[in-house]
Length: 571
Image 1 (cartoon, rainbow, N blue to C red):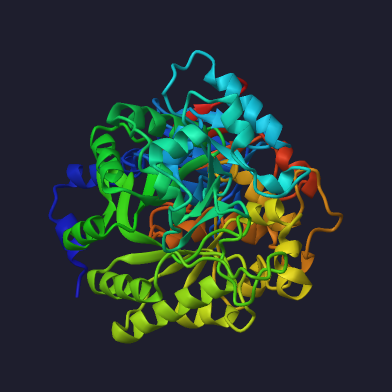
Image 2 (image 1 turned 180 degrees about the vertical axis):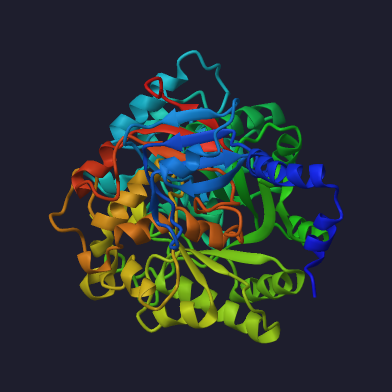
């Protein structure tokens, strides 16, 4: 039987038969020309794709905001067209856009506008910074700040308000501790809040007191609301400016987005309004704060993913189990070694954690619960287990935020229950100087256990907890691989057996946060088809010595194939 194409060919007149081969020859280049060209081609770079099928390449091509190709320079240049921008990086390094898996966007923005107390070496320095900020501030106007840490002072006891009250008698002052789990108020602030000796400790909170029972000015965990509730709220316009400032600050450090660890409904509404208007050049995975009305609203609405061209996700709830280790609010199974009458604080009843988790599973929402102490972590794991027994769910991706001190018996439970430890490596290097005093030598071995968790098969989503720590993600990268501070102390690292590899550390800031936010199909690696979010660095963080990592400069941050931050020296 004749091939049908041959039959049709022989039906043509002789002169047309001679034209067919010529037409077929023309068709090849015409087909090649129909391939769409790239908007941007990046060449001559060392590109870590975090894609195991092709982990290191030298070129990228971007089209319509997504990765069109990752491979060799020669192949990428085949996609060059008349309008293609070609960026020759001359050997510089590219990594996927970094995601901070736990930060506080609005709080970060506000911290840029208030008194910065991070790094203060004494109570006197705290007061001096507040006094300097107070110049020109009218009497009666609140002054707020954040970042003090008594563990960095010569006297590591909590401060008392008297010196602050003498220096600023006419302005209410509210100063949050670096971890956000304690605050110091002066006399004017306590008077405005109606705080007296008869004021009782709220559930999940504590007022520090003198031996006679008078408040010292320090309020821990849920007690902070006693003062915070009388501070005049910021306006919507002020919050918008703070959000913009926080995004700009994040982008200059190589972040393309973050997981916003607990916001109110008004703030989420503002974020959605900004995203709808194209004012959110960032990828935000927003967790709903633990407010019963807000949680009910969003559960009824249902999970929202990749809204407004993949700029906003609203499908997770943030809960709290306990406080922080630095303020002795983290819930421990045994008392604090340096405070034998104190086991820490539970900020939420276990039944509440279980109830919200169960309701979230039924509605298709993720739950991410703050837990730092070993008792706090166990209570959360128990609540999750009960919820998952009531509503068996595959791929729920529930998380524990911080997961700093975990009893060794509970470490395998993360993998067994499918729970993601969302940890901030930089907390380890901030806490290591005094964590031993809080926990004692035996319990210390169960602290910040990255390797122990990774060995069970879980992934770790890394972050900063900004503004508790610097938003610069390289601090957590450096801590993860070295377990040393910025001065490269201690030699060899603190409990070095818990270090991450460079590959794990990079994944913990790219593809693993994407997985922790149900975003891995579109983000987290430089894989063709995914969003073209990447960062240009001036050195190779995967190969330089540990001591040189923090000297790395971010040269550019690209989101959707477009630069949102560039240093002047970029070509």
